[in-house]
Image 1 (tube, rainbow, N blue to C red):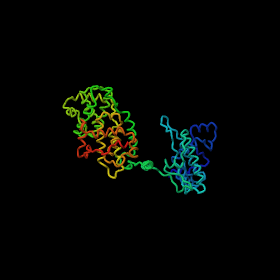
Image 2 (image 1 turned 180 degrees about the horizontal axis):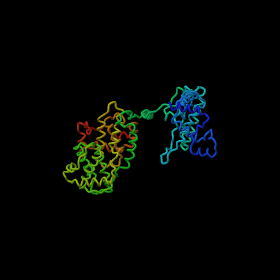
Image 3 (image 1 turned 30 degrees about the horizontal axis):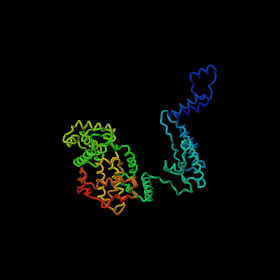
Image 4 (image 1 turned 90 degrees about the vertical axis):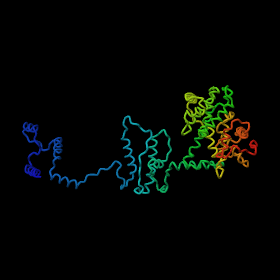
Amino acid sequence: MKHAVMNNENRSSNIGEPTVRITRARAKALGSSSGLPPLHPSAKQNARHVLGGNLKRAASDNNNLAENSAACPQPKKRAVLKDVTNIKCDNLYINCINAARGQIVGCQPRKGSLQKKEKVAPARFVQNSKVPGDRRADLVGEMKKIEVEEIQEVSPAANLTIEPTKVNARYMGTAVRSSTEADSSVPMISPSDREDGMLRVKRENLDDRGITDIDSKHKDPLMCSLYADDIYSNLYARQVDRRPVADYMEKLQRDITHGMRGILIDWLVEVSEEYRLVPDTLYLTVNLIDRFLSENYIEKQKLQLLGVTCMLIASKYEEICAPRVEEFCFITDNTYTKEEVVQMESRILNYIEFQVSVPTTKKFLRRFIQAAQVSYKVPSVELEFLANYLAELSLTNYSFLKFLPSLIAASAVFLARWTLDQSDHPWNPTLEHYTRHKFSELKTAVLELQELQQNTTKCMVNAIREKYKQSKFKRVSDLRSSKPVEALF
């Protein structure tokens, strides 16, 4: 402080003296011209002096600066979009849009960065309480025009026709509403609501045709009701591609007969009961046997080896705990070694190209039984067991290879309903819709199934009949229809 006061006093006493620092260059210039230094120094030196003086400013200078700043306040810096809360301007909304657009245009993407094909328009917020009522409609109209132009600029080849307010509601969650649309809002549709709407429309279409919706209990995730139609559409297409040749016995196989095949499958039924395998394993085993025999010649000494190997592959695919290779060798009384089974397994898998997933009769039968029991107040256990019994009878008969698995499943349900109740027709629009087979298409398969059902003395394979004579299956193998089913056709 003392030095600052002394400097002020010295300056006030020596008013006429130059206040500029005399350097060597200036002294040399003074000596040559014999004159005084200029009263106003150059701009460069003045700026240097000012910068140097700012580092150590006197107290009086600080006070004067404070007084001057109080008398002339500096303008407050604002953001690019400005504060729109307390300002009323006719072109307020347009200015905000232009400012935001200038920011987006000014930011160029770096080289090598991924550029998105589509851009979302920036968020726009308009407070209706701060905008006059007569001007609000004009702002909404201008906003719609600008948003349509921006959408066309971003994706000119898309040819999108989207309402601007819906775009804002979808991406920003906020929609600008005019005075006439003050009470209306754009609903936000959640995935669950969309699924419920789709199921509701589907159910209404089915009710118009007299079809009962079996997927109405869509809240149960184990039913997969939302995807059931798509799943079975895929199964219907694949059952044609991965089916065996219907007459391979006559064309290729000369050492085995229809009876040998039936005896093999009847023995495999006993094996599946011994190891408590699921029914899907048995159906897949028979499918693998027929697919391999369709294009591969085999001797009758290797037929049992083919059967146990196909059951081994099916068990690995369907079972949680599949039996070991040694167990299948033991079940054949060690007729085949482990090396022979493994070698046959490799041969089968290479032939089918590891396409083990096959739509068998059992897969269709589950859904058809569910459709058949919709009209019942209480689910019929006898109907389910009898339909499964008739479908398994078709496995042992070589002549059923000419039918599709879905047709065999539909015929088994048809005959089971007729066996249990002859008072009503066994086919209805619900079954026709879900099985995708008309009543007239089932005639041949139903008649052959009924012949197998009634033929109890001449048949040499009885493992399936003995299996369904058990009390846990309600002894459905003993049931017969009192009226012939042929009268229905």
